[in-house]
Image 1 (tube, helix red, strand yellow):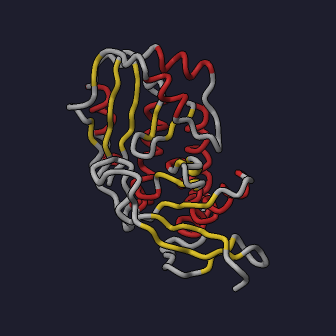
Image 2 (cartoon, one colour; image 1 turned 180 degrees about the vertical axis):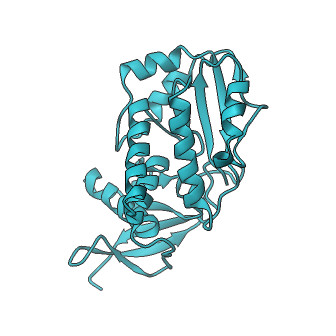
Length: 252
């Protein structure tokens, strides 16, 4: 499992990307020379629009125009991630995203979670993360990384379930939530899971049958663990940890 960034841009050559990745803070990040390409991808701007973070939309007409005018596409892969280094690698990936956008990148897509956002959306998250770390607010920093890299509300699918994609980049299960008809409430459960595992309680894990709530004196739900069958094992979206399904339950 690793981050893969899809980065359209207008560099003189990919040597500029190699120089950026050679910095010690990005040790282990590499340009995927097999899939990176010179020349535009005509459908890329449309892909950015289709995969925009629906919970925090930030793509502007200017973003789309800049992406559509790209001359190269770089694919950048992070080191392998697991539970022990997921937060660190996610933080470095966001710092790299900021530096790419401050250079000749036209946009950045989190290719390994199917998530795109506009330039200002990425830069705002990077700025907020820097402030949280400077203030020693590890809980907020963890939650911001969840917001940056996790597509939190996909669907609902044919079974009436919303699900996430991207928690595998932290070595964690993704989330399923039965659609209730209130998308804001459904999103709240996914975000609360991110806060629980990456924010206020890094290292927290949920077991099958556990109960889960969004805070004191709030609705309690039941946890069910499920395997990942939506994606093939060789897919960038595949989560070997499966899903945490947060189900309504009777009073417990």
